[in-house]
Image 1 (cartoon, each protein chain N blue to C red):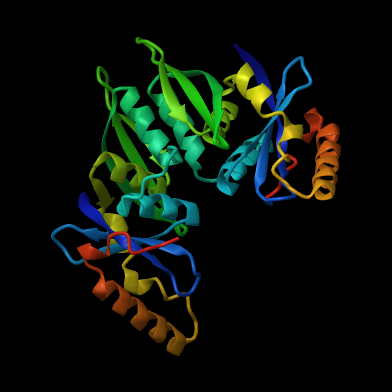
Image 2: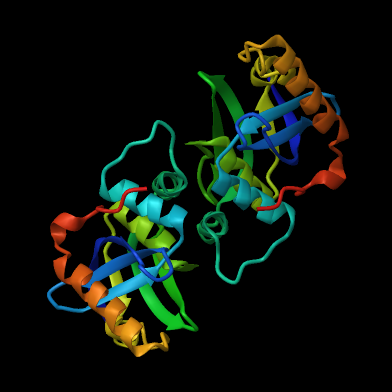
Length: 169
Length: 169
């Protein structure tokens, strides 16, 4: 079972200082935070903010390759979460051939999906596994954990469609 | 007219501190330095040093997309140098179709070529335009220019096939 999501924004994890991609369930309250690299965050943020570069960035090149090959990116799916690593698949449909499935990091998958307009799905299992509020259970100091959780709750509560691309490099 | 080159290594520009990809003419003395981004340098260096990551990095994903689409990357060509910007094309051959040409930054083109084993060509014009020793003409202080030129000459003179991937992140 998969659930369609949309990119809600990118925020900075107050603990690790690394970018976190926030996917939000369409028609439901659940969110999926995915810790990603700075460059991947930049690739996603650039698209969210409609920033145009004079030369094709790497994910623009991927879009161009897919289009020139006359393929369609039908969807991307965040499939799994194991050992703090998120897994995704991208689904490509050639003009005259069978759909193929390609293993990808979620950040690449989402950066490409945003450029091609492909829908972003998350497996029900991953959504359940990663509930944001449980993410901080590894922090041992209870007071500290509560503080960070509150901060996150505040951030997440304020996210709205207008937050698309709030993240600036 | 194009000339086949190979990646000689990545070095750090002592002026700008940014990574410089060094392509070397096969069967000739000329080199082409290309200023590239840090992440693109990392993508090239990882391949030169045969570093394996647990998950596919962005250029590994591109390689996988090309292979799954049953296409062959026949070559990449550094085609132009205008206003301090380098241009490249990648040539993709579908299984049952005509070769297509896709605009790319040279760093992406080289990162993909290294992963697929495709040859890297440079247009004769670009090689002539960019002769390394002329690159420093913009530095006004003649003494400073000479110093940097000497430093570069030393670096370039020592480059050998063993320098593949000397660059560490």
